[in-house]
Length: 165
Length: 106
Image (tube, rainbow over all chains, first blue to last red; front, side, top):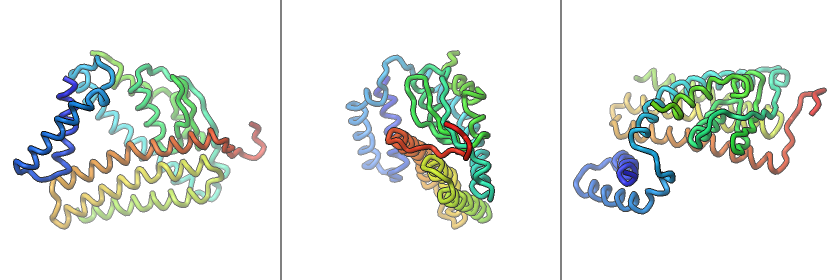
């Protein structure tokens, strides 16, 4: 199971990046992907108990989250752009360190949460220790979108990764 | 097609300009990392999307080219926040002082 998933994950980028579809190139791709998948499958999937069904379900639910995140990125980028160009910039920004404890439990969702916080401009994850986050926020408005204040991002991540049905 | 290419590239450049101006104007290390690290994620993505449309406009867009550009976008999306986070973390460990508003106590 692990081998097949690793093989697919390695072989699809090969097809995209090589761009040549004669038997020799595809054969080399199959050979290389199979060898690497054989050797490195435990690196790609360190925990044993993830089933293919669970994985694909998460992947499908991840797509709407990506769209929502992208929209948030655009909105907050415009916000930061406004702040950067405003002549009264020093009044608008109020940088501060924010600490909060998250409700998400699994490692993958903590990773996605940290990365999402960093991706949206105005907030950067400085450190994650267990469930405690240390986040630097640029303005009040950016800080108000953080999980400590509004739980929308967290709720969406829990929807994607931790709901089992 | 042509106008979509222009639109995406110009909007990307505007975001890049804002990023650079922010980088110069913000007061301390952390706020500058905000401008430098993230404004360019969105603008890179927009410019790459513009490149897809520009290639389509010239008639040499293949699906393989579009997929390759999407792959670049994917890596920028993963790599850029990670690098920003790493630099912020190291800066905090090294003891860079966050800038405070005047009259605001720690």
